[in-house]
Image (cartoon, rainbow, N blue to C red; front, side):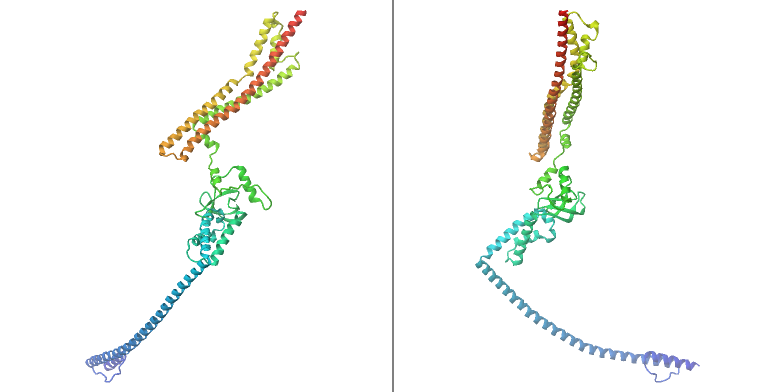
Length: 459
């Protein structure tokens, strides 16, 4: 049994080494010795195979190296041939270009090309400032014109044709009222799609609002402050029209006047810039206007009542001035005096009682008329002080800095004269109405007194 086991172990070792057994081991020592011998044989066999492989690989590597060097040499030769051909072609191109320039000079085309470049360069600035460029920004026509204007080579037919096309596009667009969908910059800074209506290169409208053109971005933006209502109505009418003729707003300065117009301060802002003097002027004017309206209606109704009383002098009424004067003379029998002088004094007293109500507020209106220009002068002085203060603080006499103070000075003057002139006419009207009524009272009272004296004499 022990021998069988040794033989099995020996067979397994020999199979693992890949060598056929020669002698069966009789003991463990023999088995160990045979394993060592087979190990040495295997090592020698491995080294022999490695050396054979290395020899074969070296030969293959030498062959591969030779093939690679041959390919590199072939490529270098090909590159040299092509480089020489490229250099020859480049020299030929330069020669042809020189000949072309000579021919162009001989034919006078250089002046034509120079004029075309000058026109393109000048037109690029005009087209950049034109709001038509917002509609055709995708064509990059301004960049093309600038590039062409700065070029020095011979212009091609395609370049000349495109210059003509871009200029013709601008000319055609200048005479059109066009509608298209584009991007509009809102006052908040966001972009939105809108239907844009363009009147030549002058005015652009979107959703009933006026737009301004930003040349740096080649885009349109909504004006933060819009034009007055009558202009907005024109914008909405223009966008809603599909045919025919409509009234529209056109800015011949291509947006300059529109921008200045919307920046004009409102009356409220002008009054606020004038500080407290303007508010005082307005209060005086409002008080005068209220007094005038109240007294005007009073005098109108008083005159109507007096006219009605004149048609019925035999029945005087206390509801009107003439009736009260008549009652003071003959309403009470105990008040009728025998002497004419006393009766006349009674009548004068009754008329004098009516005069204050008839001439009410006229003194205040005369005061307001006189105070208005003086208050305006005070506001003018305040505005000039603001102007000098702005000059002192800034250290320069920039008209923009002085405009605020001068505007405040002028608005105060306008307000002062604005309340004085209407109140002057208002006071004249009230004075005329009151004097006419007082005259009627004097005439009627004097006539009645004369009639009574005449009756008494005949009696």
